[in-house]
View (tube, rainbow, N blue to C red):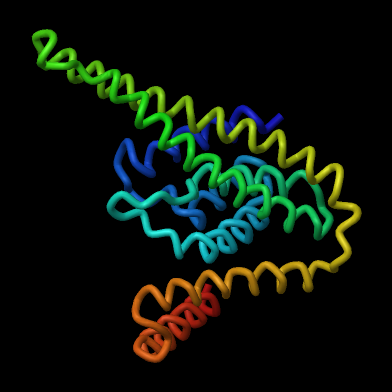
Length: 219
């Protein structure tokens, strides 16, 4: 029943990643809360968003880099994880979300290639401001529809995976969360290496960790 609202949210948040705004509301932590509210399970949404935020911190959207699409990945993960109340639902939801994030990244590249055709060629015809605006708006609409399609297909697949495999998941809730955080630690380690390594940045890392722990305790 929540598939259409989730797809709509996925389409809107996909726009924030590149096409419109880039206001950072497409970060997994924010998206997780929104998607959790849509499915009526904000706690699961916040948990999934926090986990995926750690995993995707290493993907810096700068220059010509290709990276997973975090917004649709998080909506897919939350929509999948909320479909079951077993520990396996969380792990499988996050896994499907990560896979779908890479699929979303591929669709972004494909849409950019296609959107070039929407731009009027000044060498072949006269270019008016109206045609430029129409081409730009057309590309935005296509990106919104792409985000909706990626989200809807991912949630459908994720829910099927959860329904089929969640009951066979061998770990308890605490061990499942620990396993996911260990994977996130690998991502954080790769991020630190990109900024010069732990030895050079250990003071900043410790300060950030302390500030985060304090903020979590106050909240």
